[in-house]
Structure formats: C-alpha cells, structure tokens
Length: 232
Length: 274
Image: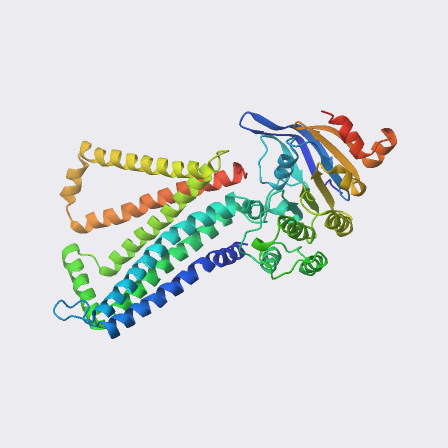
C-alpha cells in the first residue's frame, strides 16, 4: 500500500524567512507519529502544507499520492491549533455542518463523545470555555473516518483527565490503514501512544525513529531524548 | 458542494438580516397606522393635526429612516464581514480544509451577497409602497408607466422593455463588480503579515484610484482622437443610450473577471492564514 504521506525536498519560506528547508519524509499507514520540536521549528507550517492551507515554495508533498486539493481534503482530518468555531453556532449546528461536508463524519460517535465529556449539544459555542472548545474540535476531528489525522497541539489546553480520555479516543478510533500525526511539545503526555517520532528543528528533520528504537538504542524515553537533542 | 456552501452561508447571514427586515416591516406598519389614524393630514399645510400625534409620527418616521439607513449599512458590513471573517481569520482553518473548490467559496459568498442586496432593496421598496398606500391608485402607476414608455419610444426609438433590460443588466454587473472589488481587496490585504484590515482597506482605495485614473485617461483620449465628433455625427440618441448602457455593462464584466480571477489566484496560491 502506498504511503499516506510523502514529502520530497519540501521547502516553505515566508518572504526571506525560511520556515522549512528540504524536508523529505515518508509516513506509512497504520502509525501514530509524533511530530516533535521546539516552538517555531516548523511543525505547524509542515502540517499546513499537508492540508493545503499553504502552498510549498519548492519540492512537493503528496497525500495518498495526490497533491493537496479537494480529493485529499476528503481523507484528511485536521485539528488546527486555532479555534475555528464561530461564536453563533450551537454544538448541534457544528455537528450538522460536519455531517454536510464530510461523508465520513459519524455523528453518533461524536454525540457519544460529547456526552462522555459532559458537553451539552444545545450549548452555544460562544459560551464554552477555551478547553471545552478544544474538546469539541477534537471530537469533531476524531469522529471522522479519515485516512490521515493531523493534530496540531491537540492537548495543550485541556485538563489531564480529559487529556487521557482524548488520547484514548485517538488510539481506539483510528482504523488500521489510517495514520495519525500529532504535533506537540508536551511529549511526556503522549509518549505512550506514539509508534514513531519525527524530530524537527529549525525547519529541518533532525531525527526520525520508531519509539522502540529510541528505547533500545538510546536507552531513553522520547522525552529524555528530546531534551538531549534540543538542549538549550 | 456549492449547494451546501450556499445553504450554510444563507443560514449564517440570514440570522442577521431577517430580524432587521422584521423590525423594518413592523416599524413601517406602525408608521402607517400612526399616520392614517393619528394625523391623516400631516402633509397637508392647511389643516393642523393633533400636536402630540404629529410628534409621535415624527419620532416613528425618524426611526424608520434610521432602520433603512442601518439596513443599507448592514448589507455592506455583512458582505465584508462574511468574506473576511469566515475565510481569512481563524474560521478560515475550517473553511479552507473542507473538501470544496476555492471557486465555490467565492461563488457562494458572492451569490448570497447578491441575494441580500436584492432582498434589502425589495424590502425597502415594499415599505415605501406601504407608507404611500392610498396616496395613489394602481391606475396612476400604469398610466405613468405607459406615458414614460411612450416618451422613450418616440424620443429614443427604443422599446421600454429593452431599455429596462439593459439598464438592469448594467446595474447587476455593477453590483457584482463592486462586491468582487471588496473581495479582491480583502484577499490582497491578507498577503500582509500585519495590519491586514488596514492593508485591505488600502488595497481598496488603490484599486478605486487606479480605476478612476484609467477612466479619466480614457475620457481624455476621446477628444484627442476626435472620437467625440464621430460620436456626435452618429448623433442618433438611440445609439448613444445603447452605447452608454452596454458599454458600461461590458466594462463591468471585464472588471468582474479581473477581480474574480485575481481573488481566486490569491486564495489558491497565496493563502496565509494567521
């Protein structure tokens, strides 16, 4: 089966500032990958290139062998670091919105998760706390039956209990041939769910390895290795 | 997918317009009641109405005018705000990752903007009709129309139907072009890393000035090449009117195409959400 994501010599610059430099990367199906790096290292830029929100300056990126576009957006489920919920909708409205645009959206699944996290479907999005908004977005994203999940800082603002629940839904929800890319700097929290890690530093790939390799070869946790690689 | 975008765009903007329409219609009816029951001779210089009633009518009339103005301003504000906020702020992260063509984003916003512009116009017309109800009869209207169309036909040798059609075409293309000009200004504004709203406003001003400049130059060129004499020698008023209407429509269409494709290019290739 083809890789779900392939980047070849991918570069992106904003004016004179180079955010990504010659990144080449292959992401197979069926894995949970941590995209790890300090703030400003290019994680979000990379993810935005995959979603098609940005266009590469050089090189190419393929999702399921296709250029980012309508067809790839159908199979990519993306959680931005931003809150994109508008203020006037109710939770129910945004569920209908997702149901309308994504045929792979499972409303029942979303409603069950909302119940588990004690979110009321009649609440207006405006009245939700920041953490609850993040939960709603994560539920929307994980209720799709996508091939590639891109989670940009998914757990930054939620409490530890919800964090565990969310990580649990991430591992239990995705299908065998789907992959999940999680970008974060809160490594210790997600380490347990990761299969592979990509360290990214100053716009370049610093290291790709499976979590098992890191444990065997470096005799370290991912968190420990991260602190070593990115020591200030 | 365009249909679904239209549906959600209609929902998102309708919740703002429908209440204003309701308030406006209600206020119109109140105005009409106060006028016909309280001071039926308000506009008659010779008879004096009850001063309290006159006062009440003056207030309700003022409110009516305020709402009409507010509706016109709101129409413009919503056109700007829906395009800017929904596509180029954080909401853009949702909209631009939907499996939808860029084209459909622009078209859905444009069509709904057109719809509300037209509906607002129709609603205001209806309220004026309600207010002036009883001061004219249906026969007055048809008579005025037939007189006008007779004049058009004898003086311009043009059928009234064709004239209305061409004028409507000109107006519609004018509205589309002005909406698309707002869109391209917003799209240009988001190319900047900071102060995007100011940049968008600046882009709008620059485009307006540039267009003014081009038209002025074109106007200057007409006498330079003695085109005005050729034009006058035709001197058939029919042709002059036709030239003016259809020429404006053609220019509008050109502007529409330029603005539309410019906006689409930026949204496809130069999108840079904050």
